[in-house]
Length: 293
Image (cartoon, rainbow, N blue to C red; front, top):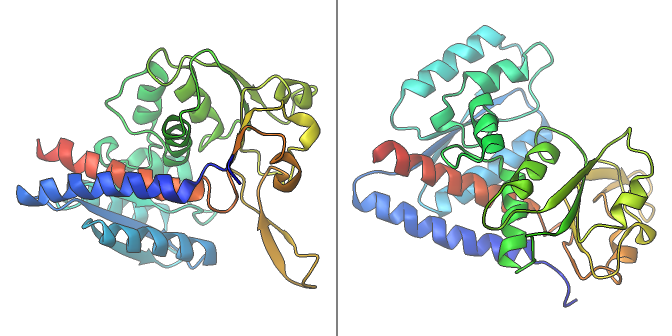
């Protein structure tokens, strides 16, 4: 399908650039390093962290996963983060979500050194993004979406963009990235959410539609302007009609019906997902470059 935006191919481009940057640091005696902290045995977290760690090693980035028991207290986790903050061999720290319910996620994210916050969730980095200060780190998934648009030569300046979802991980930072005054931005951004009246009407005006609501197959063909670019960020597990008792992953976009209408569209899987890891590791090398400067 000629209108597909191939996230795997674009992620490979980013990985190649990251590898070159990591190699340059190695020549100076600096090996970029990222440490993953996982609390408990959430199956999805195990898979995600494993994928990130394997790709890091492929790119000559030192990585390690610290696994803590589900019973770990918030105080114990904070003590570990302070130790990692002070360890110069780790340039990036990622605390994998979800955390156990007795640990406040916002407190943990705020405890990570902003200079090592390669996930871009520290309040200081969130503030830098809103201010247009390029000295911070941008959350990896919206940063990955931005790269998909840029490297696919999708016009952003002046475009009507609709972001479906106002979450802190994708929706809000995505809107902030695209409305900045600068290169590869300057869009007119509308954010739709659960209280939006007639979200479909907003979507039909969009030149670029970013779906990040977490609602399976929410975006229907009737909601998409012909020729629009459609980016599907959603990851939803639903019953598999072909396999009783089994489940399958679908996005927020009804891909098979929307694809013939869209000008460009991301598949799911194979669209946004690979870019999230690519931007995480690019941020890690960026952190190492800054800390070793």
